[in-house]
Image (tube, rainbow, N blue to C red):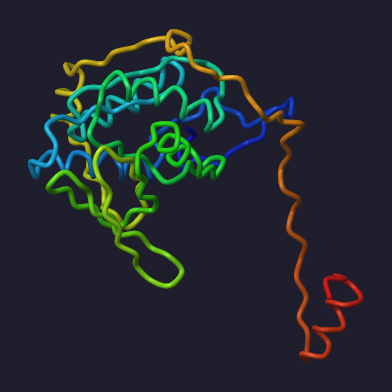
Length: 240
């Protein structure tokens, strides 16, 4: 995805956003999920961390970053198409069935399109329990306890493994990938396979009509009283 520090520009043809020559980086919530997986292995709660991404060949850079953080190996599912969460869940389901992990850690949402569906869809397709928006994770005795933020406070749930969890912002602070670890990551195994080889349904269900820049914000005005504000909301903004 486009790095969160980069100002996104709409493509000239209005079909989406400009990605050519733009810096890419790991989705921040996925980075948190990768960090949590590495921490679980360091605690002895996991034996191996495998990172997976679906995207073009250049996406291997993101996988190398995850391995520099401590992941053991990586799988790149190659495609140049933009896949919807349903298609991504289908592809990940095929990888999960092949790899047989005890726990799948994912970011709670993508920050480019704000989709918050892939983790839930994957859990449903696998028939696994899910813990979304995790702010704390503890694995022991064949289950994982997940603390998650809800409107009324913190909810703690216990899931029988295997399970799917999605990481919230407060779960952890990802470590910095040091230069020595970046060099070591180059020697770690990275498997690449074409998405078509998975034999799953990738057909889109949505059609993008057009993408446009948001309108420029109009200059605000000052009011001298609440009554004047109400009057402007009625007669000018027409929202009440």
